[in-house]
Length: 379
Image (cartoon, rainbow, N blue to C red; front, side):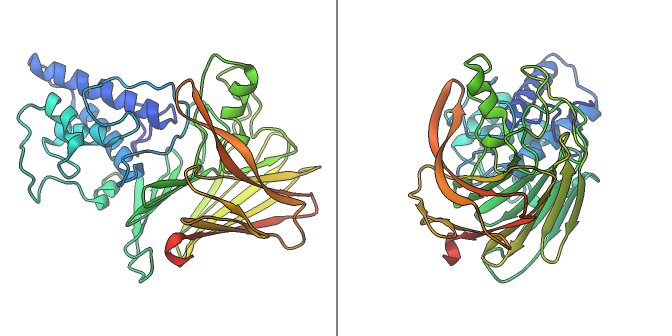
């Protein structure tokens, strides 16, 4: 029970391992029912919350989830024709098992749900899908709504405070801000204050994934490091010291504050080297404004934005631009450098591929750095 938090987040802090847990639970529950055994309602409710967490983070157009946390490529119930990265079969199956109905519109992702619940109705009705507002059913999940007349019309900010995921969502996209107040279980990556951005089915700003648990130490270190996330790295060291292959020490505690008008999430922490990082993510009419306030470092701080490799990115004096998004970076004084470099990502275990990374370097005389994210609707 304690491994699935009261907002539906999972102790392993990984979207893929979250699905592993969901698949094991729905299989065991249905196996029990086939033998006349019904699990306690508290377990069913935890599964419902875990499914709603997936529902809250997945991209509706592609079915994908952010590649957050450790990922060894596990897929327990391979009874779907949908691609490995499509989480809709999992979400649909949870709805079928816990509520006896679809949580999503009927589609090619129904096969796992129908395999588990053979009498799932073929016809879609108005009662067969779950509303996004149902995410606030748990007292630990807060959903705020707005009706602003811009590209974010009817947008929401959903706070999964127990797990540390703050989700800005609108018709066509999501921004996921990773900021746990405290770690209840061990972190597996240095992803504090990471931002993942989706719009029109494209993962515009993304996590690197995992690649492998048993490879060259340089690759193991890279994929779990701050360099592999959309955050700031100070003086080439990590947010937490690594004690072993899977263990970090000196887990920081974060201060977090949210506001509704406009939607904004502020989070800050001090790492074990005394470096302070505060990041405020604010929804604006054109996209998002990210304000990083930093101090305590000695040589340099590097801000990284890991970009979608399927787009053609061009460097500008202020940042970079593509057909889907424009990024402008500014500081009160002067940037040391701004450039696009080669980074890496792993969408499948034991498979890595290059992607562009926008890097902005500043010195200790700079205390703030501003990133303006302009989505394609207004470029």
